[in-house]
Each structure stands twice: as structure tokens, then as C-alpha cells.
Image (cartoon, rainbow, N blue to C red; front, side, top):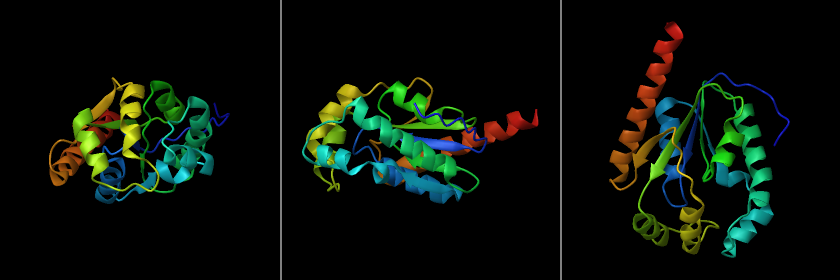
Length: 180
């Protein structure tokens, strides 16, 4: 794990889920809704990871650690009132690494059935993530117990509204508890 011990007391929201769950779309919409910085975890993969995924090979933990550390560093350096970032973060140990030292951290887990996600994956073109890897994503997924869950089975506008409403409620609770 990174030796970085920086603590960040501004809110951080991680939009997580399997490939094709809508992390980037929902994360961008949340960032815009809140007026916060949005970072897409896909932008921080090293070239070797991108090539591996492009070839249809799932990443290993060893492949992911440098990527997760780079993404965490970017989250810590981002300027603004808060940060929204998209990251698959399929396993609890990945989420622990990303949130270490972050005081106000919300996991927004985008949830869909494997059939829904496979359909979505086949109807889009991703710059490197083939639909063939969706199954491996579900196999690796360790659903978080401590997350705001939002279904992606509804139309996009409804999913965005549900995500924004859940985040707004979380932020309001944080404001109220800081006043107490």
C-alpha cells in the first residue's frame, strides 16, 4: 500500500460497479450536480493494464495496485469542495486502499443483473474493455456492505435522479452531524 498518510476531510464519493454499470456517466452527472471535480479511474490505468484488458485478459491484483495508488493520489490532489470518482473497486481490499485516511467517504454502488450489464456492454463501445470481461467482473465482485446502492435497471435519467437524491441525503446527514 502507498505510504501516503494524507487525510482528506472534504467529501469524496466513489462511484463503483462492474464494467458497463454506468460509473462514468453517473459520476459525471453527480460531479455536475454537486459542482465538484470528477475523475474517471479508467484514465489512470497504465498502458500495460489497458493492453491486457483490450486483449480480453482480466487484471490481477498485482496489475491493479499501481493503478489504485495513482488514482488515490489524484483524488487527494484534486482541488475543490469535494471529489467524485469512478472506479470499479470490485474487491473490499481495493476500496480500503482507496479510502484510507478519507474522513467523509461514500461508496455509491451501481447495481444491475449480469444479464442487464452484459446487454449494456454489448450495446456500447468502450475504448479498451470488451464485453467478454463482464463475467469476470461479476466473479470478482465483493459487494460492499457500507454503500449507497443504486439500481441501473431504470432509465438513465431516473438512475441519475436516484443517485443524486441519495448523495444529497448523505451530504445533509453529514452537515447535520457536524453541527451537533
